[in-house]
Image 1 (spheres, rainbow, N blue to C red):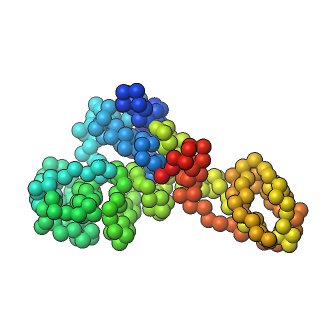
Image 2: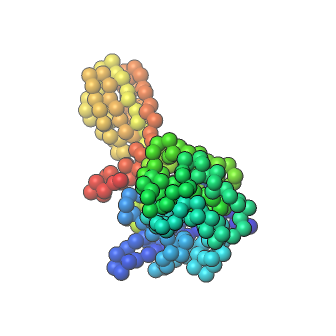
Image 3: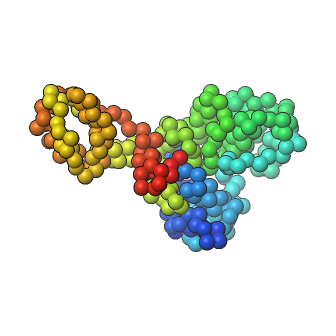
Length: 302
């Protein structure tokens, strides 16, 4: 049996003349947490909806567990937990009645009553009516509904939106537990430290096209180095005028550079000017994301 839990080939969606996504080729492996990153309108939600056959693609194919998302959608959705970005609930129902109904509809899953444990961990009062809940508590209902079946695949769209920081941490613990069980998570979020904390790989989507897919550590290491160098005598301004090198700060004794290529030439140039010390700075996933989106795109970044 294939280890590919999600696989798309040439996935394309047009809304009339407006492009949603184009030629998205994506693979998510068994047991990994995959972060799907992009600003609003980039195509994240469209991709998720095609995977679950909520909308149909204009071209291309999507499969989950090797099952075609259109032809075998009912069969594959039995193994999927989904938290949409726009959550719709039965407002007149009590929370516990909603979970009991949802559990019945999902059928036998080896996790009967698991929703009670999850609700307790999220400090969710299940005796209340959904109509009277705050945004954060409605989000908790959605989180429990996604996790309660112990699905083989979780598709989470902004799962911590509206939650307070302590509850956000609990949700992240739940995601880690899914990974520890060998199950798979497809995780879309604007909160980049969360993605960096729990995800193995990320895909970055820009204007409907997947522009990078890589392991987080490899992406950070390959994309950007940030250095501060201290000198006895500060070099002239043009010393590090090299392709892929940007000077971001300068004092009487130090220079800070962002280096995407030509690192050996940077170090050789620094050595010619009596460099006394070099400090490297950790580069976060947010830095990488803003590097993709904050330049050459009219400032259109999250």
